[in-house]
Structure formats: C-alpha cells, structure tokens
Image 1 (cartoon, rainbow, N blue to C red):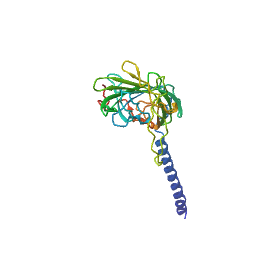
Image 2: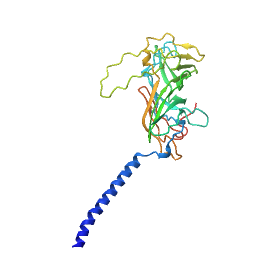
Image 3: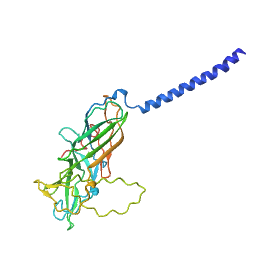
Image 4: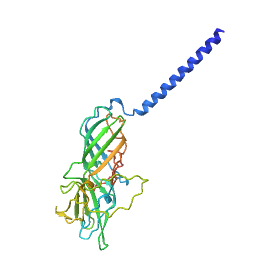
Length: 296
C-alpha cells in the first residue's frame, strides 16, 4: 500500500516539473529570438555608415512627380517625366562606396535617436535617357545624381534593440551630359530659387480609384544652368505651389541591424529608403560584387 501511494504522489510531481522545464525552455527561445542584438551593443557611437548601390533596378528617381521643364535640354525639348533607374558610382578611386551617411550623436540605449547627414552621394543612370523635341527628333543624355551645393541633406535615426527607423530629406543635384557632344545641363533642387524638385503627395492606397491626373505643371523650384553656369529655362510655365516642391524624403522603417562580428552597430543587409518618387536601396560596404558599381 505504501509503494502504491508513493507512486501516485511522485508521478504528478515529476510531470509538473517536466512541464515547468518545457515552459522555461520555450520562454528562453522566445527571448533569444527577439534579442538579436547583444546587450553590450550599446552605446552606439557616432560615426559614418558607408553603402554601395547595385544596378538592379531597385534604385531610381521618377520625374513624374515634378517633370523637367520644356526647353531645359534645348529650345523645343519637351518636358521629361520618366522613371530613371540608377547605379552607384564610387566616390573615390579604389572604393565601391557611393553613399555615406553620418550619425552625429552617440545613442546610449535602445530607442535613442541621432541626427543624420548624407555627406556623400554618387549615382548615375544605368542607361542614357532619351529626350524628345517638338519636331520629334531625339537626343540621349547621361544623368548623374549628387548632393545639392546649396542645402544640406539631413534627417534622423532611431536605433532600437535590433532594428532602426530613419528619415532623410535629400536635396539632389542632377547633372546631364549629352552623349553626342558632351554638352552639360545641371539642375540643383536646393538652389535659392526654390525649395526642391520632387512632389510630396502621400502614396494612394491600392484600393482607391484615382481620377486621371491633370497635365503636369512646371515647378519654379527648378534651378537649371548650362556648362558655363548661366541660368536657363527662365521662362517656365505655370508653377506648382512651394509645398509640392519638397526635397526627396526617404524613409526606412524597421530595418535590421546586427548582430555584428566586430561588435557595435552595423547594417548587414541592404536597406530600402523610399518615397513616392524615389527609391534608394543600397547595401553595406563590401556586399556588392566588384565591377557592378562602375566608375566613369
């Protein structure tokens, strides 16, 4: 009788202990999966993040948001409103880095923020763009994208335990070179004549029926010069309001960072920064095969 009683007592106890052990193991696995960044990853010291941009079609600028005006490329050239895929061009010899973003402040714990400045940007059109004239003739132009000479491209980043969120207001400068003779046209969206080039309307939901858009108007926020620095396209058509000429506001949400083999903050995978009229999808330095981002 004593032996039967002992067995009836010890069996539930052992089952309860096994259940508790299983719950503890599941909880431990859950905590581990959520904590991909090591606790000693903070503080995240201020510094530069360097990137390379592949020519895979994931990075582009869409001029539909604010078309390049008629007569910009020459008398009789039509307004240009096409999407232009881009690829990185190294900022310096011996490097594939085409984008540099500086983090100004040290972030001491998860959820902290730092100001950002884009200090380097060097992209080009994968293929020349085709400009059409009113007499139906065409020209091809190469396009380069850099940073405005007038306004700083800046924003902020919030660094969480294993992800980050960032916003960058980028003022691009577009340089066009005619293939046939090397003639140059330059368009700086941060020039004093206006606040920028790209429109800033919110992205419409996919389930909303959108009425046909009116014919695009030319924005007076465009500042265009020729190769000798003379301002061109002074006689622009009717302009959009200044509120629709915001800089390209690129946002990145819930992007992963770490764990890093060297410790500290690092971005191990390509990130997508985008808005309605532009997208930039660069990868960390050293992640793109040599020769993809080709210098000119």
